[in-house]
Image (cartoon, one colour):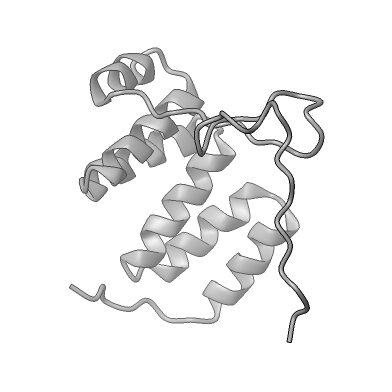
Amino acid sequence: MFGPWRKRKASPSSARRPAGEARPAGAGGPGFTVTPLPTETAARQAAEGASPEDMNRLGITLKLAGRTDEAAEWFRKAAEAGSTDGKANLALYLMGQGRNQEAAEWFRRIGDPLGEAFARRLSSEPDTPPDR
């Protein structure tokens, strides 16, 4: 149906690289980089330095640990400090809480066409209680 399957010959430089490890620049194709999240303690210390990116990173760390309400507080701090990622993460949290009108406002504050499209869509939907 899809034709014969072919195995690609792996380049010598990638043959011994563990899965998920970034490919060096110029290694024959697009690569990716993985930036691990810091520990919660390290993220909290960095966030106290008032960097919007660090505040958002702490929010992500807390969200992954299952502490979504505390994560939302850090997303809000990051958003109010000007982080676009913080605004998006806060808007997504608010959507999950059924607070569509407030989420629409944060998407609108992102200031790009995609954020505006999400805001328009959410503005037409009523707030709903979260499914818990």
